[in-house]
Image (cartoon, rainbow, N blue to C red; front, side):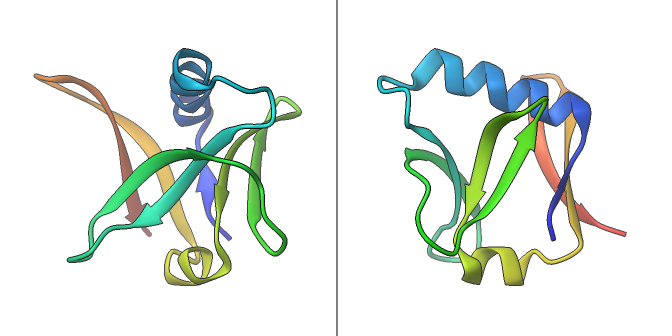
Length: 90
């Protein structure tokens, strides 16, 4: 199961509130060609892992992505370009 830190959940809520155009939309974490990760707007699908923060859905992952990222943590990191989401395994 993917874990999201409180700060990352706040960042995801902020991204979602700035980009969603429909109430049923949420952010989906996807695998990009070449192995990178990306976020996109989507709706929850059957079988998705759903990440909630303070009772609000902030992120969904397809079963294959959730399996690939099992036991990973999504956190934030401050960089020169601003705050970024990072995925790590412990």
